Amino acid sequence: MNEYVDYIIVGSGPAGSVIARRLSERTHRSICVLEAGCEDKDFFIRVPAGFVKTLYGGKITWNLQTEPAPATHNRKIAMPQGRVVGGSSSVNGLVYSRGQREDFDDWEKWGNPGWGYADVLPYFKRSERRLGPADPTFRGTAGELPITNPDWTSPLCDAFIKGCEESGIPVNPDYNGEEQTGAGYFQRYIYKNKRVNCSDAFLRPAIKTGRVTLKSEALVSEILFEGKRAIGVKYTRNGVTHTLYANHEVIISAGAVNSPKLLQLSGIGPQALLAQHGITVKHALAGVGANFRDHYTVRSISRAKSVTTLNELSKGWRLGREVMRWFMGKPSILSLSPSMVHVFWSTRYSPNRGDIQVLFTPASYKPGSNYVLDDLPGMSTGARQQRPESSGYVHIQSNDPLSAPLVQPNFLDHELDQRTVVEALKLARQLMATSAMAPYLVQELQPGKDVTSDDEWLDYARQKGTTGYHMVGTCKMGRREDPMAVVDATLRVHGLENLRIADASIMPQVPSANTLAASLMIGEKAADLILANQAA
Image (cartoon, rainbow, N blue to C red; front, side):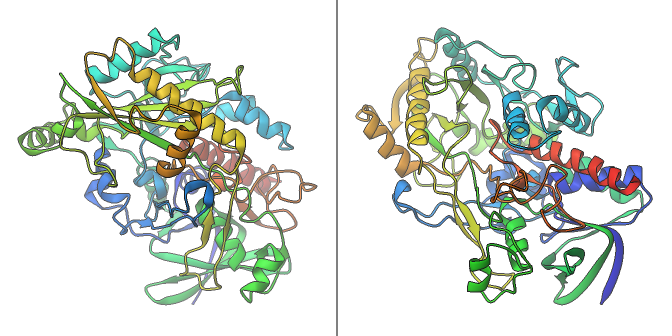
């Protein structure tokens, strides 16, 4: 069955949804968004705390696992990603964090003109509706995605922030403003107690224009070419294979795992890998799937006293009360993001630029569980390096589109990453031991007081660390002379026509932040690039 549209967008996540919205606003062309997952109708998607039900449930996620590696004790680490309309914005931790201006100045320095901080700031502002104190120089107030401060706070969070001040870390009222460094509450895309995913903010309004068609449960298996020009895609829906042709462009926004996977299945990628799986090489491009980056994150757990934590509030009659408050639109634990407090700081390895992040939440998980809260009062910190040097890869394991790709992040492969995460863990412990936290701290449960040396900390990190869910880099943006670059500064795939990639996979390095905000920015800039090409 053959179909025709002007623009094909593969993936309905943050970037894909934004592109669809902007094209629908500024052109009368037809746009089709193909999403492998189902509609975003699951009740728990809109409940912020509902991520505990959706992230590891399997129904609306890609249930990815890493390959074992010696640096992380040969563990397989779960790396779920959204497989649903809205992509990972429907299942993630809801934190809105842009990163440092140097992140984007680096992108430009590495051969990507137009991607410096001054260039991308307007794109960050365009999609944002900041509800709260903000400097208009840096923050947007007229966009579609509401960015709010938490309306539920905890004495533990306030004490932790006060302890940061004791330790010489300033309170920063807006880490998305002029300067990231400091401590404070996270900002989130939660409005009136509900998650606002990218489908709500961007895609659904685009569909209402009549120019955008969404096909959910449509798995794209191949990009089609005439010579070096992309002309369409093949996708399967309800057991039927369709061919969809694009009069103008094919835009891939399937994420840092599935974008390189689709390119490789289509004959674009490392020659040896494609030949290994019997795929005809249509365009050799060594960097497809390389340069995988993520924020390796290590959690520490402490027992709390003299305070009610989320552990107790999530059970029995207390939970019933919180559910009632949520339905009434009142502050409730159901409207919280999983991490509440941030600390952006520097180690001795990067004294002039923040290189670590510590997270705090007044809750703790049962040992060995995925997001099951403990029965006794607890609190947790997370520690991560902002810009890891370790890089991995995503490779197809067969020519079957239904087969999961091999994901090898190579966490802690680089010595600087090892040293930096140890410093982050030690800072997290220090911040739990301040006088402000003393009234609430019973003891550190994990890793425990016996872990003191750098070697012991590193071994703990190898044992307990996990993904930060911030996968990027596998279709890296860079100069054509860079043998590992996949797209140029206009997001066109090097050496091919009418094919762009616009999602977290094009990031040369993971930003010093969660990745949703930067992915939205990429979608905004991609839309301008596409429209400029149409006008040319």
